[in-house]
Image 1 (cartoon, rainbow, N blue to C red):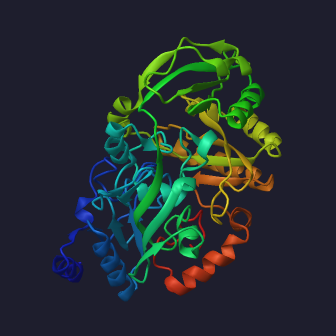
Image 2: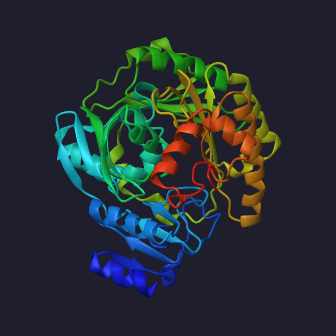
Image 3: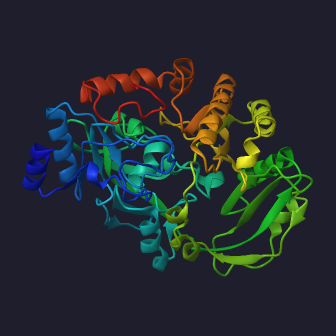
Length: 441
């Protein structure tokens, strides 16, 4: 620790130690993450503010063969950004806008999506998509994939990435673009080939105000039939569905509308759908709503599994999952239901879980107040993951590592290409060891 402090001081990098592992604020405590299922104490934390500092930090850690994790907003469920006895490289201070173009914006990796949105809003633009929590960092979200509010139009968040600058485990700063193996494996790569220190992402001319309504369906199959129409005919800018387990009320609802502040209140696309209930049209200022930070007040444990089924081939596996949630009483811990989305797949990224031409995503995130109940839920969620993988699906995020058989199904041929890159860039396996669903643990 003394040596690390001296080295960090020479490079202008703030360093903290285990004494900072206090409290339940995930933004301040490097020993916990959003899931709160794991607690690990790092030897020290390097708090970087520039790409050069990140590269220097990775060079320093490689020279000392010290394992480390990359950390942004820590909105992860199962300890991926936590290090027991190793180091943590904190990218939260690596924030700011680098450049803006007519249809793109370039930001440092620790910039939040909320900051990007606020920067673009006065110009009448926004990122192609935004996830439920826009306070996550650019690098963190692109490292896993991202299922946004416009997924039915644009696919996962990683589909809108145009260029990256990557700090490799060797300490090199490498500009990369689609087709470069480093670009292709950094996206959805959970930090396996280094830190995303800069990203250029597409934007589009849309308002932060949503003009829309709530639609409700009795059954998931009815919702999915209409979700196909929404996807094929591009009926809405914004379309987010949720599945609930409340009877006899309608089981699926979606917020659907246009991201245009002055949109007409009539909805010609509605005549093409068959929801059971339709609310009046309202206008929602999504950005004003996003400014409030709900995560700061959440204190529950959050195990999770996010399942990606090929559509329609995986529909039977999805139905089994729907039934299992009730049979296993997982629904008792899902007061707000589960996200249910239909989106086009993301081609050309070997580690993307969205490999099918169309993907059905079911996000199950129980909210639990006792750690023993969270552990019980994890076992049930693991069963759902195994069944989805056996049916040809993938897993997006989990709060548990996958078994070896499941892991082979998840990665497929990408396991070989990723292993080759890791041997070249990080032969000691120091960078984010074990992050990709347990791979390389």
